[in-house]
Every structure is written in structure tokens, then in C-alpha cells.
Length: 552
Image (cartoon, rainbow, N blue to C red; front, side):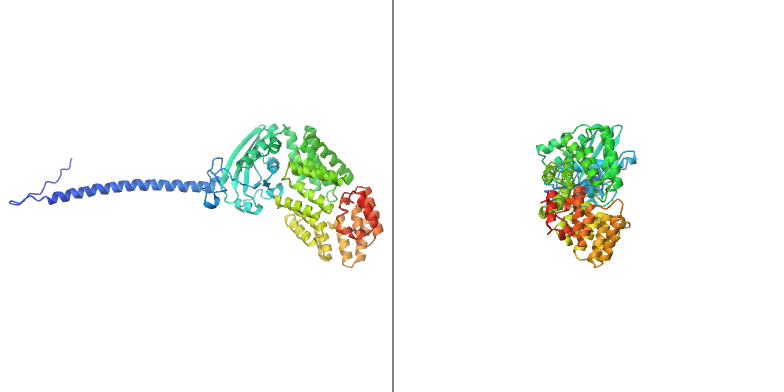
């Protein structure tokens, strides 16, 4: 049924037809049409505004919660005035000078492959550290964030870096895949991500590709030698490389058992690939630590001889390997007393890898033992800048201060080292020595006796004996000396010389030092710098000793 329109009202007789009702009706109709259009347009505009708001909100939420941990292609935030220099097109941060690589996640199906992911992290750090002008946080500090859930801006602030690298590594079916992404350390904004995949025998090339790509993204210009160092990689036997990574993981524990396992793995790697220079460098590092009294499982001279042979072989196989030059420098110093050759090798290592913390750390100790205290402090501070959370680096800084007779600063450095590694015997030893020199013998004894097996640690025992002597308990110090002399095997000659010097027995002290030189005692290189030996320095026999160790 169709609805009919209303009939017009009748016009009264004799009346003139009035046009006003028609005009009102027309106006009313026009207003109605206008209102409809306004309503329609309003709805359209509202829909556009709502859609735009939804898109903006979605992009914000995606960037805030997904981009920092997502795949490649995530959009970076819109630059604000204070960020315009740091973010361009959401890709790179021009002017970046510092970077930290967080431990890569193990995405392999086998959870036992964790050492492999850690090894890839080490390799990426090592390759990036070779780029001059870029401060790359070293392994020890980066690894402290493994399995942590700290916000990235907080990590960036603690390490003092511009950019953080996150990523993952997986190996399966003879191939390795590394995914890396750059995160702005200040804002947690995602900047770039990419994945790289290669066969296992090309793993060194894969590592170089990732490092080179990161350098390009942060607008770092590689010099031709740096580019050649990164890209000139020989294929490596996958089994040998796997054994090498296990060796490095064991070496990083810095324990006697860890060094023994490391030597075992490096030997196996070399049996698989006899031209693997990095494995020889690892072998040299492990043997060099075994020469130290705190870690020694071998006689010092034997350990140092093996370390030097391995280092020389590593350099012969790969002259661009900074780790090998550092090991060779350390052995030239401590085994050959070749201070000139050692310095040349340290400088070469730092030319090849200007971000190699271990080279700065060992070079600082080399300089301190020669009495070049300002240079030593500069290199120790550079090592600390690269590895701020390393107990070993803080301990070395303490040693540098100790040799320079800055005993209060040595104490501060060793206390910081112990905060990071409470069980460190070496840090307790330097701390105790610093306290003795500050006239705090009771505090020194307390530090040494805080080690459960302190009486089995000859250097701690010597420190306790010296502290008792400083406190006026000479009889107790002499009793400790008798305990040391009754030991089998006998204590190191330098340990005995320190206690004899403290007790005012110069003839016995020089007799012990003569034996230390003859036996090539590892610690005889500290002869020129060690404050404990200061009472002996006026004696003409001391100058003769320095000459025999090439330190005159």
C-alpha cells in the first residue's frame, strides 16, 4: 500500500490565496535537506578521524611493545627536536661511538648449544671491537646481562652506550643463522634488524658479515685495513670450531679446572685443524695463566714455554690475530724478559684490534712493572672503559695503583673487584697488601682469613705473616715463615723473599731472589715495582738483580 500525500487545506470563500504556507514549507524542506547533509558529512568525518586515531594508536602500541624485539622492518619513532640528530629514517644513529652486544639467544633445538650462542656473541664483540673509533663493551660486562630482563635503557645507562645489539643464533643441518637487531639504548626504539645464514664451514665469514652490516647501519666508516681484516676469512673445520668454542668457554671461567679443560679442547681442535690460529692463541692464553701461582698446575717455566710456542705458532699462521700478539707479548715479558719485544707485540695487538680489552689490561701491567705509572694508569682506565663490570679489569687497575704506591686507590679498586667476584683470592691478596702499606694490618689479616682455605694459599699466608710483623707480632710472623719452609713442594722464591724482606733479613731475601731468577719465577718481573721489596732497594745487590732481569 502506497501512502498518499495530505490534501491541501481549502481556501475560505472570498479570501485571497495566501502564499506564506508554501514558503514556510519550502524553507522547512530546505532546512531538512541541509541537516541531512551536515549529519552525513559529520558521520564521514568522524569515521575518518576514528580510523586515523586507531592507526596512530596501533602504530604507537606496535612500536612500544613489538618493535624493540620484532623482526626487520619495524618503524622507528618520530624524531623529536632532541632526537633529530640521533635517528634518521628510523634506520641508523649517525655519530654512534659506543655499543654493547648482549648475549645472543640460543634458538637451536638443543639447549646444550648454549656455549655456541655465547661463542657467537664473543666473536661478534671481537669483530666490532676491531673498528677504530667505536667503543664496544667487552665480553665480561656484556655477559652479566645473560638471562636478565632489565629494561634496555637501564642497561644502556649502566654501560654508557648509544646502541645495543640483540639477537639470536641457531644451527641445524650444517648451517648457522644469526639474527641481529639494533636498539637505541636511550629510548628502546627499534632501528634495524637482519638475518644472515651460511654453512658452518663459512662461520667466520658469517660473523664478519654481521659485524660489517652493523658498522654500516651506524654510519661507521671502515678503513681499508679494517675491511680486509673483517672480510679475509679462511674456511674453518666445523668440528674444530665447535671444540674451540668449548675451550674458550672453559677458559673464561678463570679457574684451574677451567684452564685444564680449555687446553684439552684446544688440543682437540688443533688435532682436527692444525692450521687453526685462534686455537693456538687460546692454547697460549690457557698455558700463560697456568704459569701464575694462583692457577698453576704446571711448573711456571714449563707452562710459559708451552704458552710461548703456541703464541708464536698462532702469529705465524695469522699475523692479523690480535689475541695471538697479546699472548706473545705476555710471554716475551714474563718468559724471556724481553721488554722491548713485548712492548712491540702489545702495540701491534692494539693496532689490529683497538678495542681488545685484554691487550690494554696486560699492557697496563707491563708498564706498571717497568715503573711507567702514568702510562699504565691510562691503559688500565681504557680497559675499564671497555669492560666496566669485569672483576679482572678492576683487579688490574688495583695492581697498577699498588705499584704506583697509591694504596688507597688500590684498596678501592680491589673492593670493587670483590663486589663483582666475592670469591676472588687474587683480589683479596692485593687488597690485603694495600691495607698493610696503609698501616692497617688487622684489616689485612681479616681480609686474608676470609678465604676458607687461606692457609693453603702461600701468598695469602705470606701476607698474613707480613701483617702480623707490622702489628708487632714478630714471633707469629716467624712461625708462618717456618710453616712455609716446611712445605713440600717448597713455596715460590718470590713469596719467601717478600716475607724475608718484611722481617729485616736481607741476606735470606737476596738468596731467595737469586733462586727466583735462576728458576725463572713468574713473579720476578715485578722486581722493579713491588713495594714489598722497597727495604732491599738501597743494597747494591738489588741493582744487579734488576740487570739480570733486563729491568735496570
